[in-house]
Image (cartoon, rainbow, N blue to C red):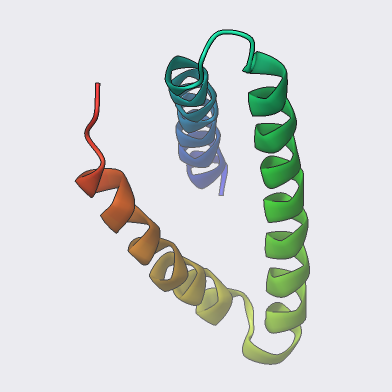
Length: 87
């Protein structure tokens, strides 16, 4: 459990900084406030939706199945990330 938490935290922290930095790099000067607002809203709503969905699913499917389904749901998000390699 501790190892999983460490891996999750390290990956989450790295991606959190990388995504925000990437968004800042792609916005014209003066658009930083909009980027910050959009990123924070997406972060908060995504965490809330994920927690709610996982909580509802755990009650019927159990922890193991919920974690496995979470991994399957996240996989399609890797496709646009891999395809978009703009500097």
